[in-house]
Image (cartoon, rainbow, N blue to C red):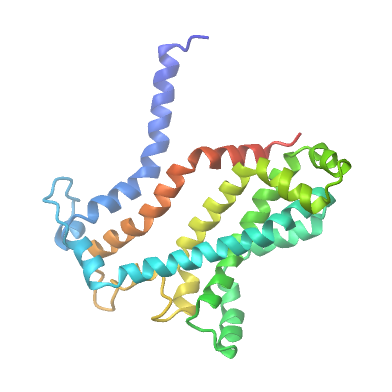
Length: 271
């Protein structure tokens, strides 16, 4: 079926209309990271300017950016790994045994604002002398990652035919072995989707690190906050740090984009 030129033009206009509002903040941030403070705050905005790299030098030379990167990586990878270890069996159980109450409870935990956990978390970890520790931040980030894993994988497991594991169980496999050998291998797109989304949410989390971490376990989002003072905001360094923080998440999304789309769409269709 041939598409008329008018439809192509309308589709292109609609695509541009959607892309511009979405990409504009990122392009503005990227451009501002190469501007001086005067150029950033000037009005009207300067579209033509002499780019500088001083903001990136300030971020990587004056701040312990590598340490923040390592902290964010350790916390994000550990939180996502533990969330998969707990979330995959939980999602399978909810999908196969129709445990709707448990599903609603986990969904409520995901919908609750993270700030509501801060005071109890702070009291518990301070009493246990776990402030400024990886344990405190990993457990806190699991509040974000675990519900995402369960929510995505429950829908995905419901699309996997139950006959596949029943055939394996008829041949002598236990339910646990059928889950490991049959269900998980065919659920790759859903698992990749869960890993990608939960890691990005953990990577970008600011609130838990701001309250529960100190010098030892500060994460990347705190690097942005370091350029904000009472007197002024170093917008160039803020933008450069934001670009540096977003780059790994963007690369991860681009690499696994195909699997993320497949995982979300397959989990949204039952039968």
